[in-house]
Image (cartoon, rainbow over the protein chains, first blue to last red):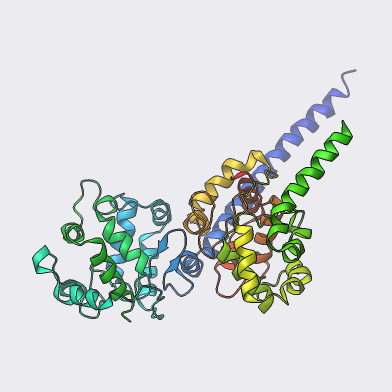
Length: 220
Length: 198
């Protein structure tokens, strides 16, 4: 009666060790799959991922949210904003998670890549107040304490260093940022480099915002 | 019991056909043969009720230009829209967009939470984009971006698979790239979640 229990016990032990081996193998496969995915999820895949929302040539895209143009953007500005999303200095329902998984090296490569893209502006902004927009952009509104945009963003709207390019930016995005500045930007206690924009955005009326946004959206 | 049920069903069907007949019986009926009498979708034909009118128009254009090229589109829709002029397409789009949509509710309810998480946040480390960014918080769509909330499980699953296989829905849309990053588990979860969104 005892005889059968011997082999059975040893077979169950064998089964256990087999299970361990299988588990280890599965783990190895899983790990190598992850590293494969990371390899595939390298730079090219990440660029493609950015462009699924920001437009296939990074010219911006009109989704549920207006997704800003990244093409030609100043690298330092992009890096600052990605950090701002992570640190919740800039509120955004999607970008905090997107930015969180990017390594500093990846951020630098992406920023350089975007800087070198030069698609045509996406267009589509109303053209009625472009003249007013140009005047505000180049001369500001001294009576309302609005400095000339060109003073910092450049007369061609290309920006420099941490000051963003505005040329070709999606109209709805610029309108959204300028009208929602106080709610979205400069959150938390950390000092925001774009602090100067808070009073400027505040001092612009809705129609002035629309005029400037339309003007810069057509700058090449 | 059974007979009353049948009568009620017939009455309900007639009630649904009613408004369609009032507009332009023939062309609407051409659509509803397959898309269901109240345009809520039927087997492989997707729901048209409540769909974004600009999206419906863009798809009818894509069928006509043969740029939406998945098998069922080729088989049914290329012929169906061939003789449709742009004005008729716009009228049909407006008509179907105005019908209140009903969710299909035919996905796996156990996958809802997973599907919703992918819908809202994507999976950034796997380069899976957030659906929410384009399709909106309630999957209602905007402009040419379709309402995907409440579409049938089978339809959403099939479309996501087809984009991943290299089919198109038009020129310059991001969906083939989006779908390429999705695995079968993510597709199942998304299609399940969306089927319950109202």
